[in-house]
Length: 219
View 1 (tube, rainbow, N blue to C red):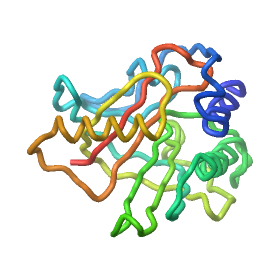
View 2: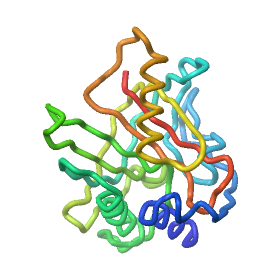
View 3: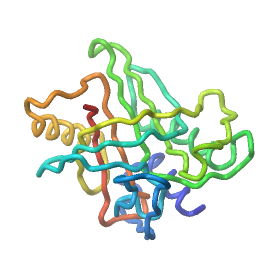
View 4: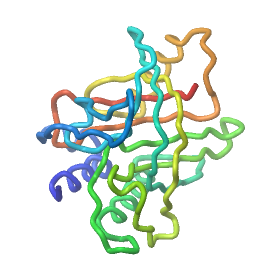
């Protein structure tokens, strides 16, 4: 587990280029408890807890999924300029929380994906809000240690329906933008929420094969 956490930290701090030569092997995912027609048994979750969902529609270019409500630990930043530095700082705060910087001094297993919400400003020049989330493991959703960093907080995401596009390899901002463009084109006249969107990354930097990245557009 320590190796996996350090690997995930290195990905977000150092970037894909620095980690591309590494390899990391995962096991088999586990069931989410008490869910009908929903599962987190997906190959891209590897041996980590993932948010459970039901696939509502499958199309050649995307999936429509319904996610159950779930608890996450999060931190956010509102800025006109968001770079890998800010991304790393946000990740580091959440990493410290699961490493024991919480009210119980408890180490918490890593989950997947590292979810990021982007809420654009009112104009292209206005600040945007970026929120990064780690999902709380399924067996800790009811009783979750409180963060001690005031900029880190627990939040319950309500059930949501999202359109999901995916791509392989190492992620980047340009690849995310291309994936969003492709997904919006696939949706054509289908109504969707333009107020915010998500990116989801599932892999350690040590994994060089079968990598999986997603972009989510809420219904």
